[in-house]
Amino acid sequence: MYISVEHVNEDRHYRFGDSEPFECDAETPGEVYKAMMSQYGRCISKMFVDSVDGKKSKHIGWVFEKRMKYDDSNDTFKCHTWVSLHEKPPTVQIHYMEL
Image 1 (tube, rainbow, N blue to C red):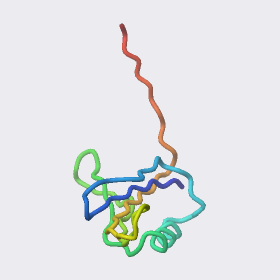
Image 2: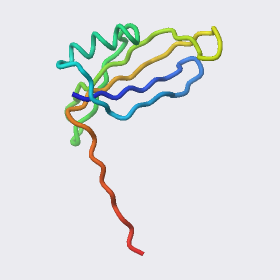
Image 3: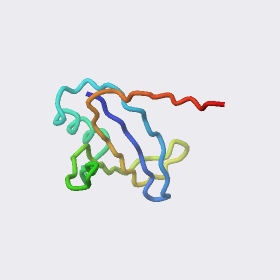
Image 4: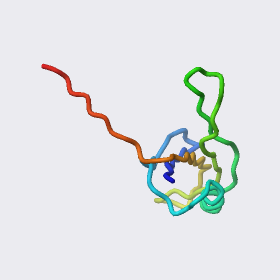
């Protein structure tokens, strides 16, 4: 199982620390959920994506919330962490342009 993690500073409205999908040690989505909740705070929402036809949504992860400190001061901010699960690593496709 692979996960990707994205952080959002909700106080100043910017994203930081986004990750490419990486392999995790967890064997079940429940294990991922528990580990992420202990690291990133309480779960405030589920993440969904719509199907191609738009008729069905698929649950793909969670959004967690926690107050965090800035690296360079003792000030804090509200951080939302978006964690999505992936079955396999992303594939890279290269499309060359003809000159």
